[in-house]
Length: 81
Image (cartoon, rainbow, N blue to C red):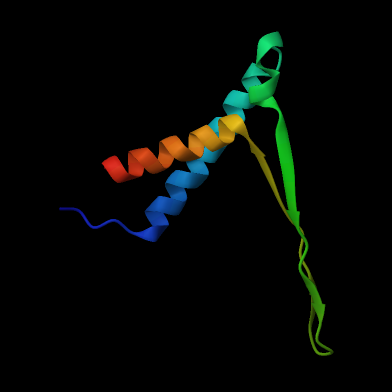
């Protein structure tokens, strides 16, 4: 039995997310599939000023139904591996 690790799972999730995003972009011109290609931007902006160090980070995630389907498919493929 092969040992599975977290790095491989994260790689699968990112590749699934990317495949879903590309599929969404390809299907944007199709009239009846707007509900699949619509996406929501999630943002997280942590910042701090600790007198000796200050940081300001902006992290944005674009998530849609096809991206979510890609993530689910990637996890399924990972578990099947």
